[in-house]
Length: 183
Length: 244
Image (cartoon, rainbow over all chains, first blue to last red; front, top):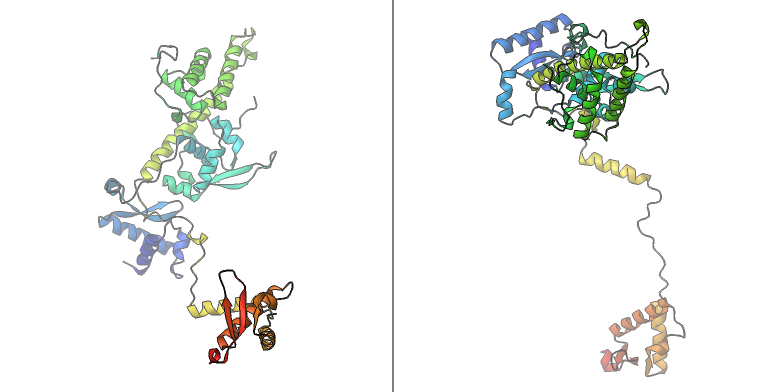
């Protein structure tokens, strides 16, 4: 194993969150992005070939060492680690709308969901899944929300482009972003 | 095949309030359950079912459900109005509802995908669940005891006027009282304590006198006697053998 690969493994092991390429490059001032990529794939190869219980996963615009899915049941059964609490459908609906329409204000989310979303927004913000990203120019300058890297982590996505494209969905409504016609 | 329409009371709803994330969700549930065409909703039937459902589910206190119920009834009424002959002018009162339902259905489809992804993701654990933001707590202070003491001293220096205890000159005059007692006893054999004190003695005078008496008694210069509890205290000149 190369020296850089060893360092990468140590850094990924020590970090509580996914580390981006830029962050990993700081491990060795002489290393190029290409070097880091190669080291990452060497580490991935080592884990995959050696039958390890962990793997290097690319998510949330970074890399993280995670346990393999096939080990989850046994680990959870033994109550060594508990699975994170699942979000409610209401929270997921709100997240979905924010993910696709960000930056988006509360009124627009409520219009689509047909319910008040104050409480859900607060919950999502507390869990770090969304954040205020600005203010609308509209009346009252309402807050605008966007998703955070924690949102990508929650779904195990590399970036937002991994969300399903709307035209691929079976529901034939062209872009979700289409403005609601005033009735 | 569409389910037969029956009053909600005959058709037990086993669903719970938490199962619906809002009125659109409930509406979509009713439509799907009966396999209705979303673009051609039998509005009268759906409106009745919706009203029945929110009654059974005790959702009437949720404003959003009532708003939707009112909206459905409005569409139902508009549908009953006679259409103008030229169909071009006629706008389907359901159009807005259909658009909203389709939009919502799309969101739900994304949600299903997201729930699946989140489920898969939760099968893979990161290295321990380290609570976020450790940088919020200030770093532990690395200092020796000596450094801490020095820091404490510097702080003490800053305190204005290091007054530890204010010393007040004691207005007691034991010496004077002793002299006075000796003088009185040189003229008389014995004297009552009450006599030694003036008309209205100050507290300090009484204390001075008592201390002086005790001091004299210790030195053997006077003898003290009291006939009974709370009785007058007699001060006698000590005899030569007593003093010895």
